[in-house]
Image 1 (cartoon, rainbow, N blue to C red):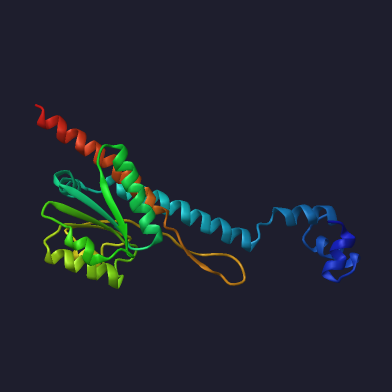
Image 2: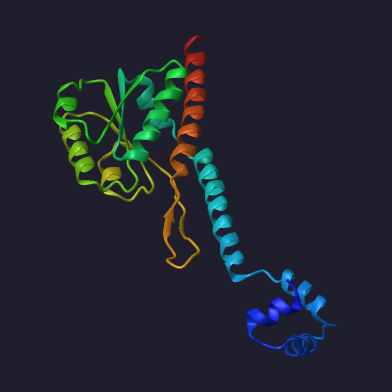
Length: 224
């Protein structure tokens, strides 16, 4: 940008711009232009802050899931005759499918379905020895809660995966695996809110790897 362009955009004279530069102890317009380039804008700061929060949220989730004791959860899955995966929404169903894919590659066959499936048809086919893994963001969906309560009546063990351990679904579950999400306010005129759900898929991968390690140790101890 030239001094003429800046003068026109700011609706001030070139002399006023030079005078302003002098007040900042700068030699002239060239130094002023360099100085302005070095100053981060508030928008840039906001963008960096959001990005830092998002990345730090991933790191926190990974560390928590890496260190948490999940042996009791794995014990239920290991001894189950059949394991069912339920996703209460689109993202949750994708997470269920991802778990299905990974466990299938590891030699374990799971069944998955979503909130649109007829609950009574599913419940009719449950037997003793079956286990249900329910994936829900908030753990408060009416349909999900109704489903969980009906499974409790049939004495079907429930493992819930939610973003917090303090919710209705978690309280109805035999075991709960919880994770953290990151909430952001995006830059721009409307300042839209954004909640990252990547932690669902981070959890899936860590959960799968840790289960494979658990299973290998279990099988090793049984051969001794």
